Image (cartoon, rainbow, N blue to C red; front, side):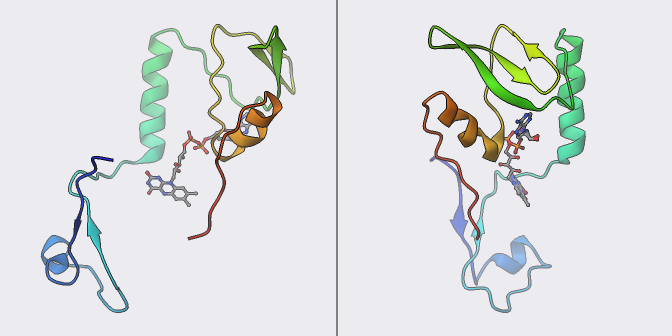
Amino acid sequence: MGVDRHEVFPTEDARIFPLFETEGVLSAIWSPDDGRANPVAMTMSMATRVRKRGVRIGEGSRVTDFIVKNRHVQGVMTAQSPIMPEVVVLAAGMWSRWFAVKIGVSEPLQAAEH
Ligand SMILES: Cc1cc2nc3c(=O)[nH]c(=O)nc-3n(C[C@H](O)[C@H](O)[C@H](O)COP(=O)(O)OP(=O)(O)OC[C@H]3O[C@@H](n4cnc5c(N)ncnc54)[C@H](O)[C@@H]3O)c2cc1C
């Protein structure tokens, strides 16, 4: 998928990451383009930016169903009231599959232990 990555164990790992504990490690992959982000700070930063562009963010509204008309999703039902936005984006993560099934779409997402 075009991700730059290198198998580095056991020769290079200590140079790249001196704290690396090699005991029991069979293999190590280094992705030089990977980074670290604080997910809370990043989310708040994105929320601030989109709010400035007129987006309204509603929290604490559980979506219970889609509102479908003529085979098109036109809105969502929430526990409080219906919401009829210009565009509906299904971004419920692992729970998307359950919603997608309701409108006949296969969303092959599942939690996998690893
Ligand atoms: C323990 C753990 C560690 C991870 N560590 C990393 C990491 O280090 N780096 C990395 O890149 N990725 C990591 N991931 C993966 C990463 O968290 C996910 O890939 C990412 O969060 C998916 O984003 P998303 O927006 O698609 O879904 P989510 O972040 O799951 O967001 C879905 C949202 O939909 C909401 N939702 C669900 N159902 C409803 C409903 N009916 N009504 C309203 N809202 C609803 C949920 O509350 C949630 O807020 C980790 C995941 C886990 C579980």
